[in-house]
Length: 459
Image (cartoon, rainbow, N blue to C red):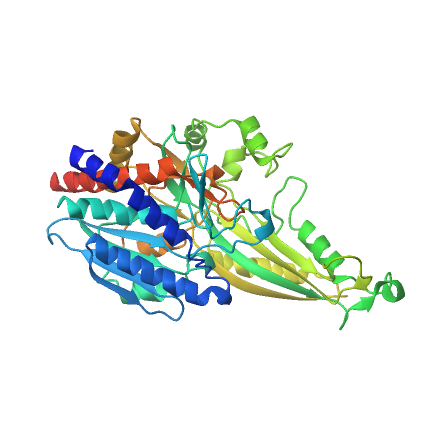
């Protein structure tokens, strides 16, 4: 990076950090209505910081839910345009008692920022605003740039689809740039070249019409919690293969040569187990741990409840039981089809002693980003410059449904240039984001713009 940018970053490092800490103090939990005003306040915060950084046309675009923050800087119509996407909403912080410090009172410890949203996605999204500020202050913005920062990613981005489709001209670009993924390690940079899709459902199992005394009725009336456990257990066989008929019909199988390339990425299974505190890994037979977490579909219970869960004992046979279930999908699997298959199968395996209701929540499609595109090459060169080594392409296990939407609605590919680490505990207590990662991202992003503009200028 040229020295003037290095100097500007060094001179403003403390302010850049303080601004992020202020952003993290806003509990923008989109899933919980009690944080509604906090989510709106966070949107206003992002709007003001975009204006201060030098963006034009900054506005809060209303949706049926939370607003989308939009802004742009059009340097020259003949230059390529980068659309930066991020989200300002965060996951619920529950259970609060498992946090070492309050989730919305960020603390810095061991060179990491601990707070809900530190990595996912406030810290990573805010890098782009600060990188843009650097380029603007030094009048060195080599591309046009547009920002679209939403507030509903953690609840499925329900209102983003209609917004993108109705504003396709406004959002027109040459590439979408997202930092909402991770790297292999701080000394092993990587670029995410694919993401899994998602089908998320909630199930309700009802037995008797009211809670019953477990002594009077136990053994004679079906317990819906027991029935739910049995039904869930049947969704996988002894090889951890999902038993839903048709579930694997459209799965895109990875070639042996591709699997061999993926296996070159550094991975120490013992360190992996030690970090997670587990005695053994588990997953679909015939695949490695990393393959199970990236290129294979999954089915997992995300939450389960029913009956009495308060302090002490209450001898009750519950009337209802519930579970939230997510299925991570791979390329060619359509989320709506998988949801329908799950619903049909789950209803079919219910014993006659209970009634079942399956409620679909949200979903999204898997996406693969080509590693031979101009934008990928620009990201590869940018990371190579600041990290001193070529990044490794890796498949990600998570889901960002907007990636498939961008390709369909805007006819552009996405670059997933994330700076987080798998150890950042996103979606879990004690989420963190390294100071190294935050500032390295700010340093690297301007290089992407420079490289992308240079590659396009040569064509």
